[in-house]
Length: 352
Image (cartoon, rainbow, N blue to C red; front, side, top):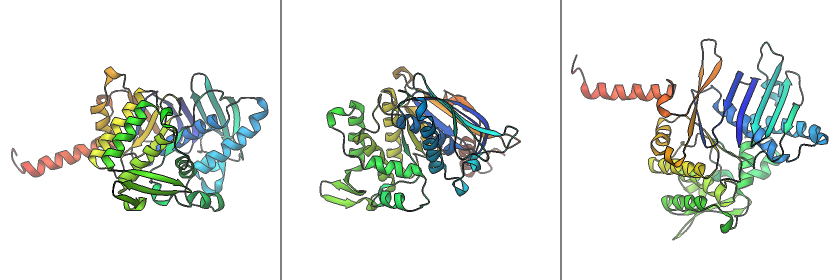
């Protein structure tokens, strides 16, 4: 679990501090406010925790190199140069820090000319399980051969795609190992999609129904996105109470209304059992389903992190735990404008 994230002079951000809910977190904001950057920064620091379970001093140099490599491969800055992620400001240093698990933490910094992150403090021991990141583009349609190509060639995919494809290619976990809610969620996805995706290894994926098998590419993109979550649960990579955070960038993309509602139900159920979930979305309907389906009596908590730019183009965040308290934002304003336009067209000049 990640408790907090702080960034200083990093990409879009001069200074930003995020306090995460242990359950569901939703980043809301216009394009270019940095939602994906926040997810990627948190994912990178959590990934470092899962890679380095120990905190001995003789690992510090390796940690600096590996964490720098991970950050570069996830963000893909210009010329693969760490300094290109530094945001010009009064402070000559950029910084990333996070609090992880019960007592874990990581603090690192870099400058415009740095080759590697400087780790000022790391207490990664026992801090978090392996995180998972689902990027915006679905991957089942191009998984076959992707990992080999990524390892050999300089592709225009950031490493979240490679990490995900590696995880999806893991063997199935034993059924008795899977959490009860995971087995329930897998059954719900299978029923709604009318079948399930089968992973043969090496990136080969098909969709199996009673009448036979079909190419994964022949299936609707929304089903393929649901299939990714299904497979993460099937391999035990999303296992409430054991796995690290689940990061998902724009989960609503290409989902039909029924599938969107089911997805929200599944995410809430997993969070009730101890799975931390961190999302970024543009979709009013997705956010509204979270509000309608959450049950505070069941212990649900959805924290909304609303990003905006001020008159000086600085990005700031407001955090609220109540849908009704969300400050005015581009998503709500756009749907309000649409509703007003619909009323205007139906009512015409009535009342004028």
